[in-house]
Length: 322
Image 1: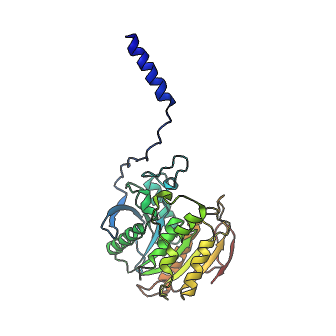
Image 2: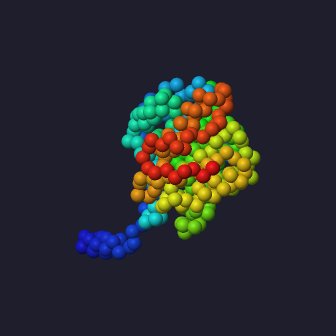
Image 3: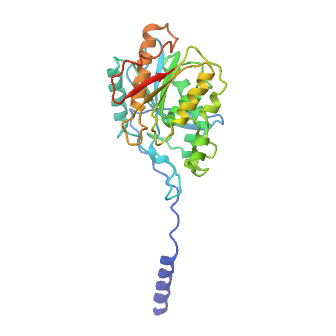
């Protein structure tokens, strides 16, 4: 008995002296979605499917038959964990505490804009679906959003699409212009439009957030034929600490050189990182959508920009570069 006790103590001491094992990638359990959460199962170029949640306001398309989409930024926690050096799966809320909060936000936004409808579309991995972090920076996510938009257009009988994205979803929305001819008002804010160069310049590991093959919206759009029925508005803060302003500047230069109808709005964001311009960008897209529906024939989108001089939101705006 004494020998057994001694061996147990020795074993315990040895185990305490061994370095702690590195935590494994966290796999989060998806919460149960209620009946109010709508999902569409989209597929990428390889036929792999993921669920994308969406939240429509009443009457999801306007009289001009345009579908207004707010491409919701993904949760911040998917980013590379430098301390644990893991990425893991994630399934978190974004800025909203519940799916009902997303509906409330969408409806409040609709009412603030005189009834202009809106569909909030969340990336795979939020509000009830699991997705690997690597997906968010890969070309596959562009195909998934593209496929989901096709299904939503068909469901609601829309003929054109107005879209807004913030941060990563701005890069996705920009890349969509390379493969869609039905986009009217496109508003992009604080986007990482050249992920490979940004990751390399920041000195992040090549597997940052699982992004082994990140996409570059700038490369996809370089040389793209201009669509004069589409307006593109890029919104950025020169002091952005999360996504350097230079990437917005480069995207603007590429689109301008290609003859696209594009402008660059310089705005001061109120958050410490000078990055959060998503609400402002959403308002800009809906302003554009409202003017389009008032002045354009059904199925025609993006005829003119919102009035750059009519600003009623927080933050300073520098005159647009057109």
